[in-house]
Image 1 (cartoon, rainbow, N blue to C red):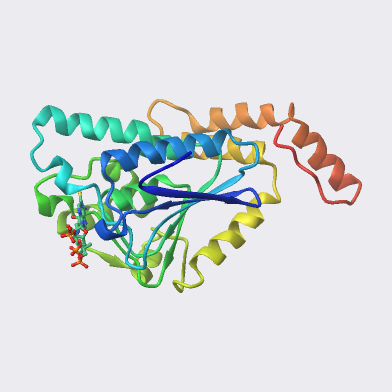
Image 2: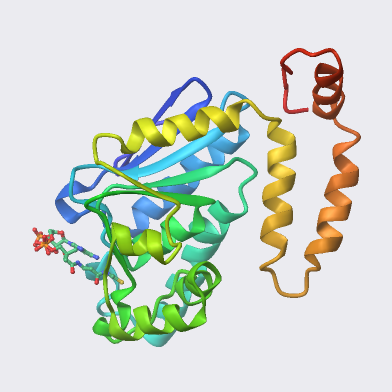
Amino acid sequence: MNYENILVATDNKITTITINRPTKLNALNKATIHELHEAFKNAESDENVNVILLTGSGEKAFVAGADISEFAHFSVEEGAQLSAQGQELLFDFVENLKTPVIAAINGFALGGGLELAMSCHFRVASENAKMGLPEVSLGVIPGYGGTQRLPQLIGKGKAMELIMTAGMLNAEEALDWKLVNHVVSSAELIPFCTEIATKILRNSPIAISKAIKSINANFKDGVNGFETEIKNFGKSFGTEDFKEGTTAFLEKRKPVFTGK
Ligand code: COA
């Protein structure tokens, strides 16, 4: 598939999706959101893809936010629609993917950029990364899940402060605030994420997808996470991967998982 705003490459069951609008600091316009939706959907349905890395092109930005030039003239209704559509197509979509998604934050992750990184299952930042939700400085609020996912990740008080001040965290601060799991040099960012992805690849893809679902259930309104865990734990026993994993352990060999 040909994309204009993103690059997609797959190697050894790891797909790397790179947002590729470096002259606009990879800002998320409508077309990019649609292309990202397609790329994530295709990667998830591809049996040869078991981990997805998401990053930005260039040395300056992961994503510097939603494309301000596209919504500067929007009405109340258009604003609400922008938020709803974006959440459905990309942000909620990524969070609920069966395939693990790692955000490799290689520079600015601001506004919609940080919201996108927070939709990923976890985050690794390069030393030059800067993160924040500066929307109130533009007279709006975060609209791609930022008011929900930021407090989930760093706690309510810190989220209130970061959003109200429209402040920016550097990579070390983001690590300290538990917004990212690791900080590495720019050169090490993709190799380091690939190393984590390779560890994930050793494990059962179907068990991982059930774990993602169960962990996400902790944060969904009206869903009992413990019930979700019980259901998915039970379902695991009906998978080929469970038979393979337990058999391989008892036979003292490495398992060969098929994801079935
Ligand atoms: N939407 C649209 N365009 C954006 C953008 C965004 N969110 N962020 C950056 N750009 C564009 C700039 O307009 C500029 O385009 P131009 O060269 O055609 O004028 C280009 O990307 C480079 O950005 P510039 O501001 O010149 O880079 P900088 O190094 O001086 O500053 C930032 C970097 C990230 C501090 C600054 O670009 C910025 O504040 N961006 C907006 C961040 C934001 O508020 N995001 C939340 C949006 S809801």
